[in-house]
Image 1 (cartoon, rainbow, N blue to C red):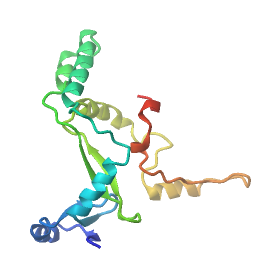
Image 2 (image 1 turned 45 degrees about the horizontal axis):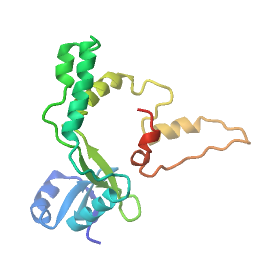
Image 3 (image 1 turned 90 degrees about the vertical axis):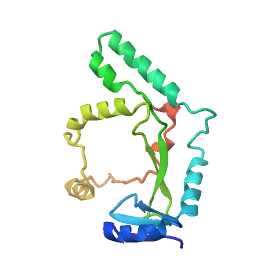
Image 4 (image 1 turned 120 degrees about the vertical axis):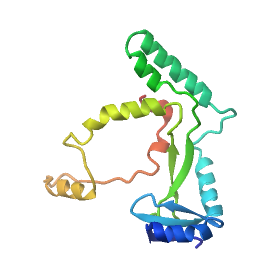
Length: 189
């Protein structure tokens, strides 16, 4: 194998190694857990290309960033004109000088073949300001419902108190690339 996994994260160790390894590989955080993965660059790029060519993503002929900026600005301007948002908020949310989202992958070290989990980094993209605003609005609500599960320990505590009738069964499903496989035309937006 061209990579090592389950290396504890220590900045001194990574700092000492990075000057040597960067020329032949890449240093990435693992998708889950507190591990650092050293991966051969060609293998990483190959896995990212597999993600791109999986059929989930569509190659576009022209960068849509400026067009998305215009659409979002237009919708925000309509809200301002209709007095649904104040001018100060319009100015804060309006996208300017945006860049396209960036795609990268984090290694799933707990899965066979160490596939990459696709991450789309959207900070600085046309929808970034609106997304951050909405996130700040709804974040106080997070964790306030009975159905919220904080982590696997909390899940086990919650499930251990569930009493099922003999004719009932509890099941668990593991979704594969759940969000990247949601059909956009069938999603509620």
